Length: 125
Image (tube, rainbow, N blue to C red; front, top):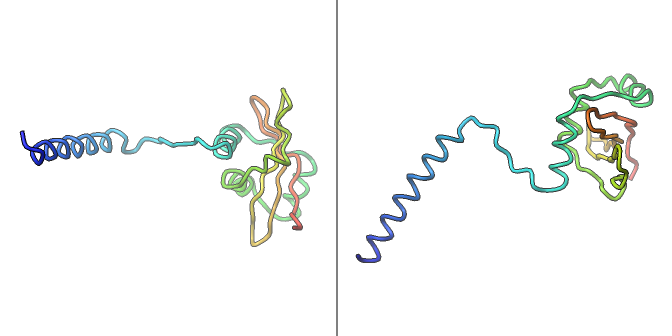
């Protein structure tokens, strides 16, 4: 069999496989969270949120809502150098994001079943 025929069969099968794969994965919530930031944020976002008194005061002063806080966490960047990840029970993460052109830092306590927002503050870099 000539090379051009083998190449045609290969490309035909490859194309058919891609079409079947797209058909079966269409509408699925498949994601590729391989980086440490993506895994940490996905883990935090999958749990219910609780707010400390300090965080609640900041939220009420700035007229923020829970959806905004969840989006700040979901689309934020975890600062692992400022986080306390060596703790066994509940790890404390520093998440950085911006809201209305101002940089924010959120201090998050991530336990097994609940996430507590310990503090929210403006970053002055």
